[in-house]
Every structure is written in C-alpha cells, then in structure tokens.
Length: 566
Image (cartoon, rainbow, N blue to C red):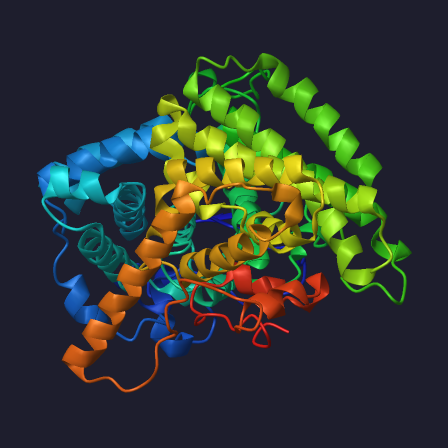
C-alpha cells in the first residue's frame, strides 16, 4: 500500500509503475477536478481520458455536478433513514456507527451535506432507496402518501443521479463501493438481474484495484482500516454469489483466490479510529453476527470447493456441483457451534438468524437431491418422499418467518429469497404421490403459505406468481380426482386463487381494449378435464424437462407447460 496525497494506493506488482503525482508535476498550482482522470488517485502517467468519459451513465454529468443540494426532503430522509437502520443495517453491516451517524446528520443539514464527498452522497441516498424497498404498499401510502412504485422510481433515480457524478470506471474510494453494494442489494428484483450481474463486475474489479481482496494485516494497515475493508470485501462476495445464482451462472466466489479474512465478531464500540491493536473477538452474538453468519457460510463452502477444485470429473455437468452430504452436515454443526447456540428466540434478529440458518441448510440439501433428480430417473420412492418432505420444509421456514410479528421488518428479505424451486417442485410432484396423508399435508401447507405470504397473489409485480398460481390450479384439478383423497373438498384458498386469476386477466383484457394493443392473453382456465391443455401435460411432465433457471427470472412471459420450458 502506497500513500499519495492522503489516499492509499494498492500495487501488487513491484515492477515499474505508471502512476505519477500530477499535482507535483504541475508544481502544486493546478486545481484538479475530481472527475478528471488527472484528479484520480490512480491517475496515469499519460494524460489520457477514461473510457466512456469515466461513466457508463450517458447523462449530462456537468449539469448534475452544478448542484450539491440533497435531493431528498428532510422529512422523507428522516423516515427512510430510520427504516434503513431498523430493517437493513442489522443484516448488512458494512459501515461503522460513526460513518452512519455522519450521513444521517448530513441528510437533514444542508451545510453538512455540501461537505460530504460524492461517495458519501451516493451511500446516503442508496440507504434511503433501500429503506423504500423494505416498505409495504400500505406503509408507503400511510407514511408518504405515494405508491411504492412511485417512491421506488424516485429514490432509484436519486441514487443513479448521484452515481452519475462519480467516475464509475475509475472508482478510487471505499465509500463509493459501499454505496454500490447497498444499491445493488436493494435493486434485487427491482431491476434486471442481468444488469446487476454486470454491475457486480465493475464493483469486484474496482475493489481488487484498491486491494480490498488482500487482508489489511498483511499490508500493515490500522485495525480499523483492516476491519472496514474486510466487511466490504465479504459483502462484495456475498452479492456476487446471490447474483450468480439469480442469473444461473457459475459464481467465481468459490474459486478465485484472495486472503482477506472474515470480519471480527465484535461490536462497533470495541474498536475506534485510533485503535492501535486489534480487539479480541467476543464470544456469542454481536451486532455483526447476522452479517457474519452469511460470510461464514460462504467461507466454509469456499474452503470445501477449493479442495475439490482439481477432483472434478470430465463428465460433471456443473463447474461446482452440489455439496456432499458430509459437508452439509459439517456446515450444520458449525452453525450450531458458532451461532445458533447463542440465539435467544425472543430477540427478532436472533430468531431471524435461527430460521435463516436452518433454511440455508435445507436448501443446500435440497440442491443436492435436485441435482440427482436431474441426472437420474432410477430413484426409488423413498428418495422422492424425502425430496418432497424437504420441499415442504423449505416452504415451512418461509411460513414461519411471515407468521412471527416480530419479524415483520424483515419480510422484504423473505420475499427476495423465496424458494421458488421448492414451491414448483412440490406442485409437480404432488400428482405422483399415493400417500393421501402427505398430499393433504401439502395442501394444508399451501393454504398456510398463501394466507401468510400476501405477495404471492400480487400478479402485477412478478410474472412468476401468476405462472405458479396457474400450475397450482392445475395441480389441484389433478389431485381432486385421485381415489386416495376420497371426498376431500377443494381448499378455500384454491377457489379464491381462481377468482383472483380471473379478475387479474379480466383487467388485462380491459386494458388491452382501452389502449388497443394487439396480441393474445392466455385465457382463464377455471375448470380442467383430462383432454384440456395443461392437465395432460402436467401428468406426463418429466421433472428434468423444466428449465429451472426460469424461476429465478422475472422478465419472462407466461409459461406453456407443454413446451416452453423444455
């Protein structure tokens, strides 16, 4: 690490460096613009421009730079900052308390705001944007007298305007990277996963250029700077993994090399800006424990996969593949030892950690079984029964999260991590079951799911929800003719779901008539027989024929179960 004009520069190579001190070259007389390549910490020896003028946003940067006023009202900033601190910060702890207090003060004080850096502006506005993301429609109407979609649009624009003022292709400060992490996580299921995946490339490369992937202790940095960089790097890896899964690509998180250690299990009060020695880690849970739990899971999987990197078979379908049963068992034991044994279920964050940890273990086991189903059609009934039970268990964790009043502030997290794979697999497997008790239990669980998870019937926000509801209706019409069920009555939620689907499609048809848009809408399917499209396809459907990546994609049309996802 080199110091130049108060900024740290990371250089891995010991060869000839091409950076020069431009201020010294100009005799100290030149006042350089931060948005000029010459004003960047990583300024080149040659006076060259940045690609795309330094920003992928093709806006009038000079116009946006003309005003440094905070674009958010004091009242709005105060409300959203409170929401962010209650709902997001405890589970995404990447900034210390003093940084957050400084940003909070600046949001309500114009003089303080004008003295913030561009990266701090972006971090403050991204935090407000994340606050909006966590609000329900009713909360937006009650507290802001606006729809959630309107607020999302406004605050996302504020964020992107703040980023437009920064040279995004030559980021040279940690605060801007933190702002991008907050913006990226807030934007999951708000903007396209593909665009966020591309943005992650920019974040990762920028972090590497600043040496965030190298541990600060090895470079002689102070304890506070070391810890700050660790928190940021592991959040980058966490987001990279999430978006790799969302986009159906291989995450490099588990195979790339770095030596940044996990953040310490400490509270912010255990370390200060003037600390000379690294504080001792606490036993039990701290303010960073939930965030640390997500990083710990990544670290454990990474260690396992790096050991197996050279043991892959030439016929492996995946670059990574599922974890072994023994590895998942070890993960579960490690979670108990490091986190779960200290959880107090009367504390909201502790309860959320308990549910999240169990759910992650369940999903990891389910993924291994899922992979086996895709490659083999010779599995016995015992395996299928276990797989079906695991799907029910995964959805059960979602129901538990929504049924606990103290976890209401974290419903946004449960929505973005909803187990679509388990849900769809449950619906597809149910017609094949012969155990009437298990079928009835599944319908009871689905009843609870739709009763607790309101967003599943908001078809306008996510096309997966309407597609899944269609499949659920088809599944019921198949199941009700099974002799094993006898005279089981149609669940009330199924009848209601049919009505909801019908009304939604009626609205779509009316909207088409009003605006004169050509094209066909999938007709309402209120009743099914063996000869009607949909039911027969479901009965003959092969589990491996599904394009499972569909259930991680928001922007696809309604599925045709007979061919579209084969």
